[in-house]
Amino acid sequence: MLISGFVDGKLIYVIEFPFRCETFVKKLREQLEKRFPSGDITGQYLRSASFSYKDYINCNNLKIIYLLPKKELEKFKGYIVRDFYKFLVEKADDK
Image (cartoon, rainbow, N blue to C red; front, side, top):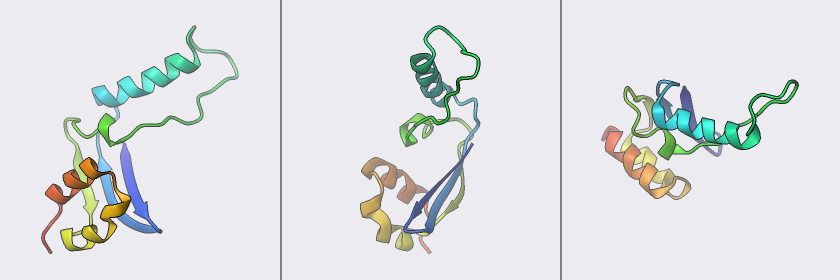
């Protein structure tokens, strides 16, 4: 999976993690089971699924593909959830 974050059209980060990450798959399964408690229904689909950083942040093999430097990242602090912002700042370069 590739997850990206934008603020006002500016790319802030791109994160990659395996689609089979246990916590991520669990979140998707919960949504599928809620929508289709008895299993698949022909002609019906779950067209969108929701998840947050909490569902993939601890995945093995998570990679930061792109991230603004700390100084730039600070400008967008108010737009990013506090704990996720802390995670990003820890990973960002000091440039």
